[in-house]
Length: 73
Image 1: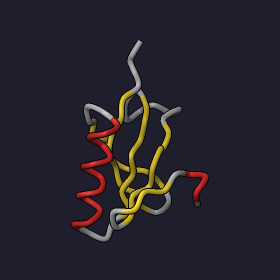
Image 2: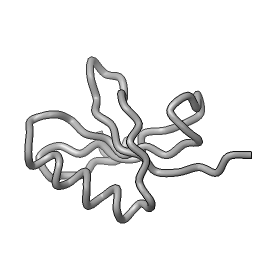
Image 3: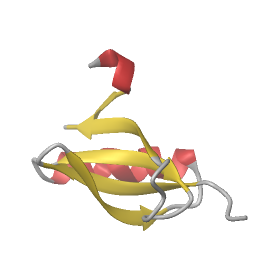
Image 4: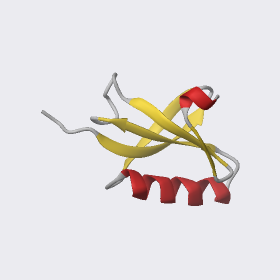
């Protein structure tokens, strides 16, 4: 059974795209913050068993260095 892991992606047309695995939530937060300050894309931090995991979830949206959880929106 595959373990859940954190990954980075972007939001396009309301859907999370891409799956760039990272080693921990802390690394995901640092990288997503840096990336979101470099461009105008909406980045996301996901948690799941891989890019094909239908039960994977977006944990944070990251826009311009600001983090939002689903319940914050």
